[in-house]
Length: 401
Image (cartoon, rainbow, N blue to C red; front, top):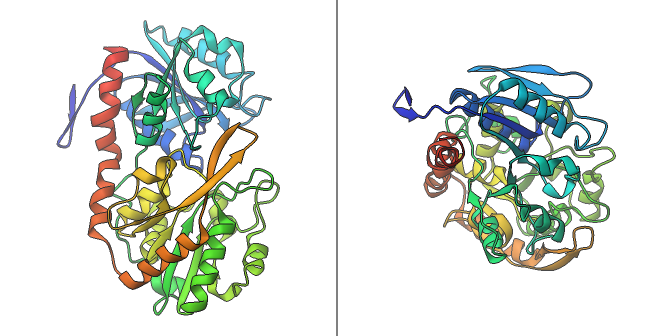
């Protein structure tokens, strides 16, 4: 063990390859990889990152605060099925530790190499459907795989299938995600958003669609806001995403137009800044500039923005299903929905109810503006060091002690 500040951390001997989006890629997975890899390295583990998005064409080294970490590029296969098993084997052989682990943080149904059966795997698994997709269940039942649920819902869904699992939630850095009223340049967030006299409803969701459906429920959320806005013209909608997202997303300005919502009542971030990563301090200010965050979706494996917003004191409207149902504090609002079949995964999603969203927006408006201390307190349980101490260290004790 060793001490850092007031915290006590354990040292481990072993090898871990983390297969996911690249370290610090501007994605939710990239953020979690950074948090995890920094702490694995800090604890003395030989650690590598095997990318399925964010690095192509060359092997690099990541400079963590605790030393360099090998970073293996994505292969020709979109999910590195052609390279990831070989990279893990090579790294494990090089490190020469007695115990090793291949740790996945991504959708497990994309993993199709037979070589994955040859070593020990821990799968930190997103379960974003109301029912478990058969391909996910098949993977989680592999004898060499230890499932790790990232939400209480995911843990319950596995247990209902008699699948033994660990539980480790995603995390945030509350030293950055806190009420923040000024941007890094010193400008007030209300001045920047031109929202001093506006009730601001926010959304933070990736604009990535699968065919005709959008898991982030942009159509339902924007339509609900358009109905709300007609009654409350002093409101505005800030959507923190790429408004067009070529190839993989929807044209959201066209959707806004289709909902009969005036474009002057909607704001987006700078697309260039969004695509290459907005600093955490600036994102915390955006969260603080919201009076409520709108987060209903068809289903979430976790939903980090829900927790980040609450850490900044912004109450949340979320879905009463999948992971979100456990990630909204008591002064937030959970909305209803109806089943939606996802034929690609052979499982059920849930579609948010537009009238239920409108009703929750009305209650949020009645609450008024200002920070929520209950939301701030609720989010503290997901602080990155708390999650490392209370969840990751007990799990690593089982594997590497």
